[in-house]
Image (cartoon, rainbow over all chains, first blue to last red; front, top):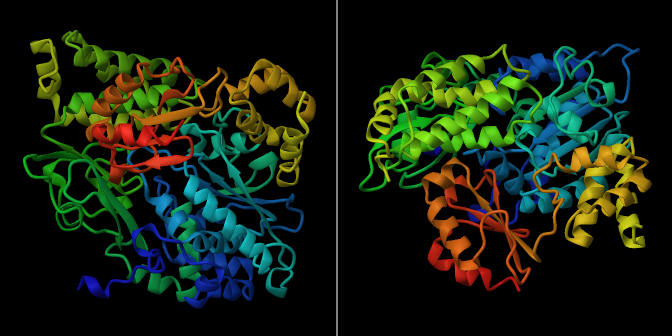
Amino acid sequence: MSTLLEKPLTKNMPPNGGEPPDCKAYENSGGYAGLRKALRMAPAAVKDLVEKSNLRGRGGAGFPTGKKWSAVPMDDDTPHPKYLVANADEMEPGTFKDRLLMEGDPHQLIEGMIIAAYAIQADIAYIFLRQEYKLAETRLRKALAEVYENHYVGKNILGSDYCLEMHLHVSAGRYICGEETGLLNALEGKRANPRSKPPYPQVSGLWGKPTVVQNVETLSNVPHIVNKGPEWFKSLSHTADGGTKLYGASGKVKRPGIWELPMGTTIRELLEEHAGGMRDGVKFRGLLPGGASTDFLIEDHLDVRMDFSEVEKAGSRMGTGTMIILDDQTCPVGMVRNLEHFFAQESCGWCTPCWSGLNWTERILGAMEEGRGQTEYLKQLEFQTKFNAPGNTFCTLAPGAMEPLKSALKYFRPDFERHIHEHRCPWR
Amino acid sequence: MLTSEERQEIEAEFPHYPTRQAVCIEALKVIQRHRGWVSDQGLQDIGEALDMTTEELDAVATFYNLVFRKPVGRHVALICDSVSCWIMGYEKLCQALTARLKVGLGETTDDKRFTVLPIVCLGACDHAPAMMIDDDLYRDVNPDQLDGVLENYK
């Protein structure tokens, strides 16, 4: 069966990280056909195709892409320039899928961006890339030069009336830049504190103009949807969310890696078939399904299908779809401490529950790990999960940080208790 | 004062952004590339070119992880301390690296050859543990290979 599966996102990628297809090779494999088709359609018709495909945002939140575009004002008196931004600031711990897309097929992302920009009639596009992705930067710069040369961007694209500028912005690094309004502030040359919503970026984004921010994997799907249609796209998936998904696994599995598979592939298939199961000598204990800011799942959940709705029913989120595996030789409290250290450090410092709460959380977990834990610490951690709940904080960073903590307290409570009673980390 | 090279590189960014302020992150990187780090003088120099105050620039410079407001060594080693690398042996690797260079995290060797800094997830989780030295990514790093890796940086 698996040999028949279509892998639109990764089909052109060279094995072993070799040079990606250049503009010519990309065209020869059917690239930029989606753009040609889109330019012959009305922008609203392109948006409709994407809406019908059930493409949901691959940055982690799963917001329907077509619906996002629908909120962009399209009247004649709409303020211009409008902007499209590719969020290539992949910094969610445990996530390494957008890197593959940019290193392996940069033209696919660029074509997706041009089509998305056309659908919302954007005038200027930015790729917001994290600085550590040096190889992606080199390959994107080369691809950008090629698309300007071949008139896929610039004035009157492919002889149409449509004009689009495209720029690459290389960030100076901070997790909160991945939050879409924080990203906008970063692009404007400010601290990347998130903005209050509403107004949503579609109405008032970069420099107060209508702006759509979209993840790299989401945009990379767009050329294929336009090219082959929404029905084809939906047929790729096992569930109602359309398309394939780049799934990954890291931790002590036999073959950590990344695979393009039908949306809705089960966790068990990912873990056992693709990741090769656990390494010899270690046992599976749990996993974060899609990055640091998702709730732990355990053995009971192995048959859950990885899509946005099914993982939610199991009490977590698919997030970015790149799983982090916890094994029995790794301390769950230590793992959560590591995660909370990350979130406390990367908090932008804007709202009190986040900067204060995450620091306390990290300190409490650190004390437990170092044998200084006390019984009331468990209550204090429970308190933090409520103090930093959605609605109490300015953005979703702190609520996201609470997801692994809350679920660890639920599934690994005896391990927390052992730390307190034995005055040490049993794994050290 | 900006050197003519620095000024040219900063001005080359102007067409990519509608405001001068938006260029400031690129400008900070230009200064850092040429001078190794961003001093108070560096902020003042950028401020004159972009019509920003040093306070505005410092607010930005101190926000971003990869802008250095203190001197660093000739090479910067960034060691990933996020979750997948932590599971796969970050602590051992960090111990080996800091012992080998006789510095702690955030410190610079006496000969100014290396600064060692922790960094958030490098997106190389399927090849953990990972680290970067300058622009080079190292994956599946085994503490035993460190000597060989460090040899490449004088």
